[in-house]
Amino acid sequence: MTSYDYDLFVIGGGSGGVRGARVAASLGKKVAIAEEYRYGGTCVIRGCVPKKLFVYAAQFHEHFEDAAGFGWTVGESSFDWKKLIAAKDNEIARLEGLYKKGLAGANAEILETRAELVDAHTVRLVNTGKTVTAKTIVIATGGRPNPHAALPGNELCISSNEAFHLEELPRSIVIAGGGYIAVEFANIFHGLGVETTLIYRGAEILSRFDQDLRRGLHEAMSAKGIRILCHDALERISKQDDRLSVETLNNGTFTADVVMLALGRIPNTQGLGLEAAGVKTDQRGAVVVDEYSRTSVPNIYALGDVTDRVQLTPVAIHEAMCFIETEYKNNPTKPDHETIATAVFSQPEIGTVGLTEEEAGKRYGELEIYRAQFRPLKATLSGRGEKMIMKLIVDASSRKVVGAHILGHDAGEMAQILGITLKAGCTKDDFDRTMAVHPTAAEELVTMYAPTYRIRDGVRV
Image (cartoon, rainbow, N blue to C red; front, top):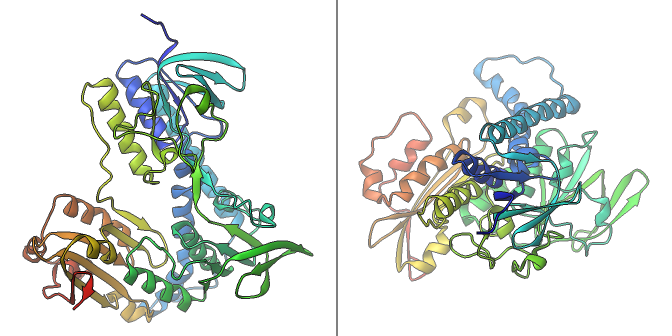
């Protein structure tokens, strides 16, 4: 029998890699994990967690304004960008420490180095040049921002990575992209007092979300003062004194302090030695895997964003647990990528699970659409004009709820609970039998008794 240095070697210290390494080590396997930057991956270090902290920071100016309607007199306020960055950095360092502590507690070996494949069982540790062997290897290197190299002047732009470390808060920013990263940062920077322009090639922001929520969020963002330019794209970025000149396809040229590219993310596979090991990738560079996350090399698995399946942290963690079941518990388990609840932490935020109206219309012969748009109770005294939207998509024949979509405060929290409901296959009758919690915004989900309209064979009737 061949002898290896490790039972498992994990390349990448993000959420998926750390979970797989920690649990395997807790089962008594000899495990090593290598990370070239910081443990915690995109989500913890320069993604979901710091972004959510920034979202909280950006909301306070509206909280101060709303307080007046409830009888509060709020004194003069000011914002200190450097204090926010320092507080964020402290929290990220604390979380990174917890990730390492969990690995160490399970007796996994923690390596601070880039690791590259030499062959199917051999890994080279770049910092020392040393090679080690492993019976099983997991690739969990995540993704990285698309640098949009074809754009003249792209080297003058930042990505979401650098947005968390700007030395000064800019006076103005142009954000290219229409996905959730672009939309979230547009709301963050605007909330912190930055003149913000969002420029997107498509007809409407958030292309994969339900159309009602897309339009509703666009209207809310525009009402706040965020400039949104759809059907447009960046043509060239150049230096103009201490600012940047931004040439666009359809809206002329203007200047900004910072230009941020949020034009998607690409799998982080460059220079990993995949070809030498025989691991196949697709045209985007993503590692090709089967239903069990196994690559073209039987002893090598890949998890998370590097596979370009569903780019969400909880999905990577779920895939890691399925890997553990498959490889170490004699229980082959396929990751379940259906009916995943997700949120966009815009302002107002979006929470969604299941099919959009457009997707459901292609899958089901007849749909019932339940839709409510209303002013939430808090806005009655604050005077804020934002509206909430709640929408249920129901298969008319089975009465099963196949999609649920919310625009408004705490939408992400509601989507998590709805995720359980839709995953369980609940019907509209189950919703109707459920008592409302009053007064809440969420009670609308169980008090929409009559369809707003129907969709039959893809046509609204």
